Amino acid sequence: MDIGFKLGVSKLDAIIILIIAAVSISLTANLIRLHVSAFLNQLIFTVSSLIFIELSVYLYGSNHLNWSIILFIATAGYSFKLIGGILAAIFSMLLVYIQTEEVALVLLPVYLLIGTSAGYISQYLLNKKRDHHRWLNMLMEQSKHLQVFREVSTTMQRTLQQDLLLKVILTSVTAGHGLGFNRAMIFLASNEARSLKGIVGVGPMDVKKGYEVWEKITEDRLKLSDLIEHNFDSNFTDPELNALLRSLEIPIDDHNVFGLALSSQKPVIVKGIQKEDSSQVLIFDLFQTEEFAVIPLINQGKNIGILLIDNIVNRRPITLMNTENILPLANQAAIALDHANLYEQIEEMALRDGLTGLLNQRAFQTILNEHFPFEGKVAAPLSLIMLDIDFFKVFNDKNGHLLGNEVLIKLARVIVDSLRPGDFSFRFGGEEFVVLLSETNLKHAEIIAETIRFNVEKTIFPGEKTQPNGTLTVSVGTACTDHSAIKSKNDLIEAADQALYKAKNAGKNKVISFKEFVSID
Image (cartoon, rainbow, N blue to C red; front, side):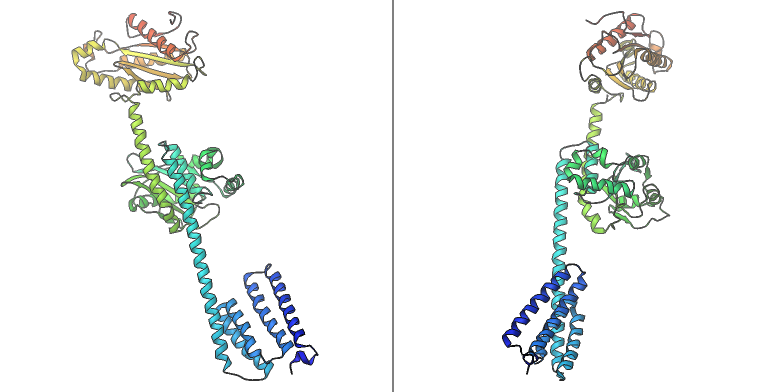
């Protein structure tokens, strides 16, 4: 007779007790498992099944233990895979023997089959679940990358300004909503492509600053487009990082990591600093990074530059897949930067005089407009020097226009060499030249004008002996916005022109300033 009925418990009562016990065990196990590790969670699940089986034995007796114990074996196999299933099968065999005092060896193969089957099924389901999560993560990552590339592509198509392009590239690489690297730096190749010049970097100089930056991004919930459009320079660039970066010029050769990346046209990951490579040692000394990736920026075989990335804050390893994910962006960046460079060259050519290399009249008007944002409101004194070659028509008639062009070219060099850094020189037209001096009063403008006149006079020009005085000279007129009669850019030009005209009439090879000798009508 069953133990439960020996205790005077009816069959219906035993069923009710068993159901209540099962519910209680389930609720208790679920409550505990929320606060423990995965291993303890599995252990609780397995032990609970054994407790349930033992309770049924207590209520109904051990007659059905041979088969009810299969629940425990299957649970152990599911929880602890193949090893758990085999150990549970052996343990169950011993438990049946102890509680029934019967040896049924025929049950051992059955138990082992159930335990191993449960283990294999659990492992298969676990692998499928991992594969599903891995593919899901990959799809989410690819979706994120596509979103980044779409935003970057859209922004790049809107501009050919190199500064903005660099900003877009670096932000898309480092932003939390971008590709997620902690720091990125761009080096651009020189015109001769034998060295790389540090241009701009985004990210922290140290770990502490890095956490502050990314916490701000998280708090403000900034998207990639927000980082591009707002507060980029003030919030997300480290002045110390960029000062160091702009001071760098690294030679390109086959003995350093930069040359290797450009020659192979493939990313190079540095996992540890190689002391024989001076460029790696330099990067470590300046930026305290032992692991970084060098991404080549190449367009149609032309070296555009290098993108250097690292994870100084979270120390996340950089993998080959990371660099492969960044390659489409790097290729797009190389094309955009190359086009921007070509555009700047064309723009520069459009603002330069083709013969002398000086800025042309179009550039003169552009720069002059910047100093006159509103009529009559010039923040600081602005002086203008206007000069032209004396008797230049006589020179051309006697020596020809080819030699005349040589004179113009040499004169342009004399003018440039006579100026201060930041002064602008222009070919205004024919043999007439203009110099624009910002934040310069008339007194200082006269000194500079006299320097130009004197340097021209003492310079030996080809064919100058044919000039009336046996030497080539210039007449110079100066004017400044600090004069009360000069209220606009046209007034300034007219005043300098009148001063030049007076210098011509006064015997040439002179400097005359616009002061009180004439009014502007």
